[in-house]
Amino acid sequence: MADGSTTVRVEASAAAAELAVQARETAIRSQGYWAGVWKRLRRDPVTIACALILLAMLGAIVFAHLIAPHDPYQGSMLRRLRPVGTPNYPLGSDELGRDMLTRLLYGGRLSWFMGITPVFLAFLIGTTLGVLAGYAGGGVNMLIMRGTDVFYAFPSVLLAIAISGALGAGTLNAILSLTLVFIPPVIRVAESVTTGVRNLDFVEAARASGAGALTIIRVHILGNVLGPIFVYATSLVSVSMILASGLSFLGLGVTPPEPEWGLMLNTLRTAIYVNPTVAMLPGVCIFATSICFNLLSDGLRQAMDVRA
Amino acid sequence: MLIYLVRRILYAIPIALSVGLVCFLLVHIAPGDPINAIVPADAPQDLVEQIRRDYGLDRPLPIQFGVWLGKVATGDLGNSLATGRPVWADLSVAVVNTLRLALTAALIGFVLGCIFGGLAGSFQGTAIDKIAVSLAVTGVSVPHYWLGMVLVILFSVNLNWLPAMGAGPGGSSDWVWDWEHISHLVLPAVTLSVIPMGIVTRTVRGIVAEILNQDFIQTLRGKGLSRSGIFWHVVKNAAPNAIAVIGLQLGYLMGGSILVETVFSWPGTGFLLNSAIFQRDLPVLQGTILVLAMFFVALNLVVDLVQTALDPRIKRA
Image 1 (cartoon, each protein chain N blue to C red):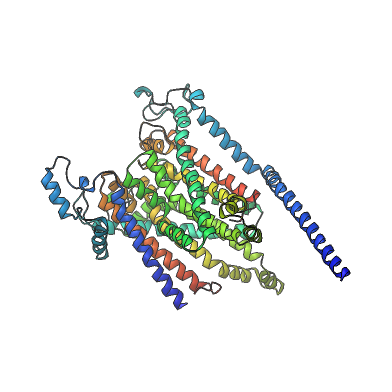
Image 2 (image 1 turned 120 degrees about the horizontal axis):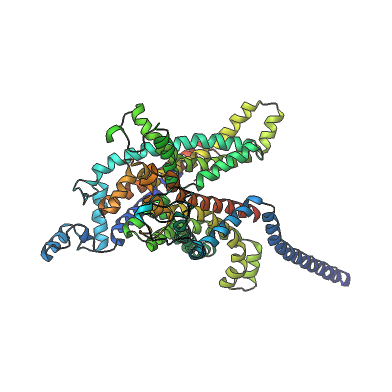
């Protein structure tokens, strides 16, 4: 009898010790996770280069008022469409004689703002709804996911243009329509990763030990799902930049004379016969930003080991 | 399979109805009273009320939706406010033009994407792979409206090889498959094809690499099957997914061609939408969005069914 109980106790303490070791290993591994991500990122020259280019662009557009050589609105009929390399006008001038470099710097502010804000808002709203659907399951899940299905029935560009077209031109309307376009895909990703995590043992254990739904979501779910959702959201930034500038290009976003890359591309369209190089510059900016965000997102996905 | 077929088709009905509802509401989220789009601002009040009754705009929204749905079901999309003609008259021509452009672009994108993706997946980690992956990233990152302008500068302005605008000589609207017309199609179709090219390349690369890593390929190699024999096995395994991707892309191209159509003045749905937006011609806007979205719903259904039929591994009930 005595021998038997001793054996059980020894086994139990051995199991406890093993659990403690496991827990410590997990803790070390989770510390090591971010260290590993950083290590992988540092070894990835393309991602680092893209991040640096984007940081440089961000710096340039934030401090546009300090570095821009001219006024973004002040033009002159006498020096319209000067070529690239004109003294005093390093990137030439536009169809109203305004300095291109200045307008590209100022234009980046609105282009970046209109490209990133919808993804940021969609990330917040989509994650909330997606985690809710994934965690709650049942009727709530049905309601949210069937709602997203309706938006999935529209090709994304068409949906953005339909909403923008009905609401009319304007920066805020364009941001609103793009946010609505990006919420459903974020919900889908958030719901699927949450459903995956929800049934894991440690969530079950937390529930068994009496943790409330909010605590479980905050402590156990969010920590595990935010990474993949964030990586997915970064991959949307590139599309969002192209679409936001595209809406302005169509005349549905920013209104003249405000500088914005898509709108500048549109107003310079007639200049392609006179000065094609200058007319192409705003598009080069959109392209550069979009490709850097795309490569950065790919790099993050690989470094964070998130499956597509 | 039959049960899945019926269920999938039944499931498309509520989706189609909700799409209809969103399109119906588009007119109502537009700022201002919809009546202002029909009558001039200085019309007398009793005339405005009269027209409001004639159009049924005084009835509750759910009833208006029902009436509108009934009309749409019989093919009546209303009349254009700008021209007074039935919306369907202009839309049917535009849809065919957009479909022609989108199909050509999808075909180019699919063929190039399969070639690039197949090569990249077969030679992973080599220079070929890196070039194909760079092309794919470029394809999905490039603002295609800008690419269209670059192509116009290169091939229309500088080289004078291809026309920059329209869908036929002298703005003619009848399509014939001769060089004169096809030359108008080349630039817009190539411009539009870069997105599906990039996406198909990425997808096919992933699938091919995954298939080549599987045990049965090792077995086939081991039993001495030739390269072309293995290639055939890879194609058979990759085809259902690749076809599903390009099928959905066709829908995205139909809906997303507005920017390219604007650049090239292509007389399709995008061009129609653009003018509808700026003339505040809400019936045309609503009808065009509805038709394009319904096309997309139908396409989704077909892609799902074709994929299930092609791939015996997918068991759906």
